[in-house]
Structures are given as structure tokens and as C-alpha cells.
Image 1: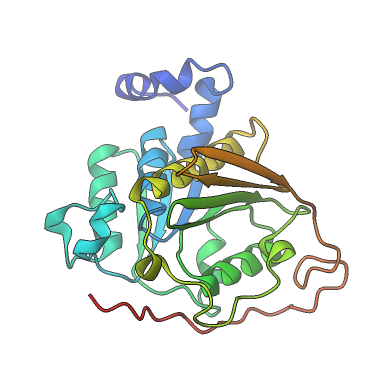
Image 2 (image 1 turned 90 degrees about the horizontal axis):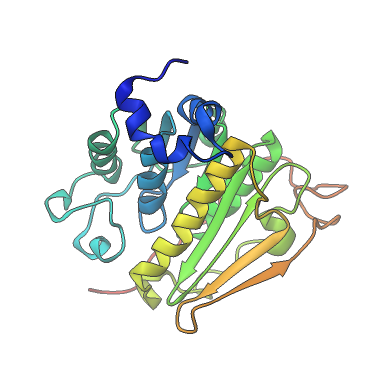
Length: 267
């Protein structure tokens, strides 16, 4: 691949890194990443991956931009209110980096469409805010051997880890979704917007490391962050041989849709 003069200048800070160089930048431009959710986590992920020159970014989200989103979903601006999030995000990415091919899916991810969607991508990033989708993403990626980044945020805290085949998956830690109403959503409990930025940026870094095949991924390690104490904590974990989806004798062999939570908060 021959870089244009504009590309050499645009990606110069990547290229001068010995771990990246011209070959690494070529890998990024040829890579394909799917971001599930264009919200608080998805916003920094999309912006940093686009800026880095990841050649194809898929965005799936069925929501429209709401005024209450703007406190943390930094890829959307005030004039974008009531616009589909995927369209709003695509507009910003194309203005940031015309090298990036943005594919949008203005639909809800389900057991019926997830396999067809994720098969086109090298790495999957879960930027969602509900347990049903997180379990669906985990199971689909485990079953198809797709690496993915998990994250969750609430109030002043966040967590993230990276899955690659043969290592710990989401169900190794959390067997199944909690009962409805037990865990509040961000809409119900609140979220400090910058926490989404911290965790989403780490997810973007993990994606770039995976694509470049450099560094040590957050596999078999759950990284947590507490904004009130400004402390990171690493919890070392391991693959659960009794896991329902990736264990020695898995019992979950087909994808299923769990009930989606409904926010009870009245604004």
C-alpha cells in the first residue's frame, strides 16, 4: 500500500511509533471494527478509531439522539437531537477522517441478525448499556470465535476486559442476566459523563492493540475504575470450565434474546 502525502502527514504520529510503523498503519487501514452502541462508550471509541485510521467502522444503534445524551455522548451535538445516532455519528467520522468507510445499522441487535452483521468484522466492541445485549454479544462472539471488548459503566464506576478465543468470556464471570429491575440503568442511577470517556478510550486502545498484534490485551483480567477515588483495580480471572457457553461442556448452543429493560425514570 502506498500512502499519499496527506496520509503520511495525518498518521505521522502513529507511523513514527516503532510498534506501528508503515506496516502497522497499513493494517489499521485494512481493518474492520464493529461498534455496538453509539452512546457514551461508543462516542470516544468511534472518534479514536476513526482518527487512528481504522479503514472500516460499523455502527449499530437503533436510538435517536436525545438532549439528555449530550452530557456524555460526545460524538453527538445539540443540532443532532432527534436524529438517528448512527447518522449523527457517521457525519462526524466522515468529517474527521475521509479515509474511513462507515457502515451504519439503524436497527436493534437480535439473535436473528447478529451473526450476519458481525461476520464482516475483525473485532467487536460492546458499547451497550443493557445486560440482554451484552450476553447476546458475548455468546455470538464466543460461538463464532470473534474477539471483542466488553465494558460497563454506572454512576462513578466502570469496568472492561477483552475476550479472545480460548480465554475468559463474559459468562465466565456473570452466569446470566440479573432479574429485571435489580440493577438500575444509567438513566435511572446516573453516570458521570467523563467515566464513559475513560472506559471507552481504553476499549479503543484494546481494539488498536488487537489489530496491530502489539502489547498485552486485557484477557483474563477485569479492569475496574472508580472516578471518586481515581483508582484502577485489576482483577485476575480465568476461564471457567463450567461456563455455559465456553466451558468444557457448554449447554448454550443457540443464541437467545433476553427481555430488554425499560427505564422507569420519568423526566
